[in-house]
Image (cartoon, rainbow over all chains, first blue to last red; front, top):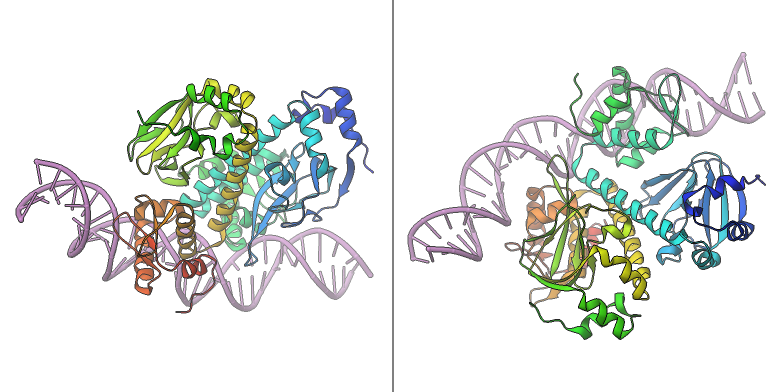
Length: 234
Length: 234
DNA sequence: GATCGAATTTGCGCTAGCGCAAAGACACGC
DNA sequence: GCGTGTCTTTGCGCTAGCGCAAATTCGATC
């Protein structure tokens, strides 16, 4: 059972307005859980009986088509909630969540959702706002998928990942969890082959550095230029 | 000034739980507005000073990229709200709204949003739920864009339009507002040329019937089969 | 009903990027 | 240290669908 750092949780925007005793009551209802890398947290179309707060690690949210293709809808970082399907009126998860690295989550039964809303001031507002942000994000990606070439989309995806979860190393800004070419392909609607070729080309130009399940952005500015369709000089 | 049918408005899910006098108070604050086809209701990146309820007509919500490409994010039918950017914490519209047919809308100044939330029970819940539905929809389209071929995407778009806004005619299920090949292309991330070719092919098979700014679905079942990737026999 | 402009159709060449396949490279367990 | 499986790289052919351009049709306007 991982040890909870109460003060860290209290600092989350989600609980900014919560009174300490209410927060404690709510935390007492939570079950902390360690989740190993690649383990499934919940399954697409599965019954939504829990919601989660990601305390540590990274989670990949994936949709699978009837044909079996997978698309990565988003990556979740610590401090965000996942599995809040019931918040938007669904009783089944619209996607699967898979630990992209070892994770620590807090789990509540769905039945407590209403109590959350009622007892934690600001919780509803923050949560619904987060849904709005996700909508904006999804629409932005829709526009990108519709108008941009593969190279641009991959560059953009890497920029996002590096900004959201980049760790500074001596080599550059490294993505903080294992990510394969296949994963990048599933974020951008292409194939791992094309991603591999692109990364190889960029590595040749010194923009990124690759590795097994690893990507490091060496020159963020040039990658961003690619992402925005500004032709990189040479 | 169009004449308001109060009972029609009161029947909307949005106001299902509103008390009659509160509803009247809120409607008194509204400015009804006729909007001619192709007129802009609000502009992307424009300051969000109003929100709208679409009473009649159809509205196209469009995002424009820096490169000038347009993508149709969704079509709005009567009874839905538009321009609720401030509800999700933005002070500028993330997209443009253009009347796809002659429209009647109710307009409120953004400053009244909080009053709406406070005075109309169920309004906040319904609205946020609608945002959730849009998110689901956007993610579903993202998956489609990432995994499906153009033919499938166009078939799907037509299915959606026909279901959402189809009017039964002797020829088949006709989309209820003027829609060009270009529009369909902007919904599906392709070009008007490809859409034209696809429609011509389908028309030859008797699945749809075309026309200038007009599409009629003659055999919905076969179109759906195409949309779901089930190979249509011949 | 003649004119004009916008929407649509159609042809043609071209290429981005997919699909398949095979060959490396690396991590991990024994 | 060795084997094994997974991840990655790379080559090669092919095609879906784009871009360009020209011809055509249809509505609207005067």
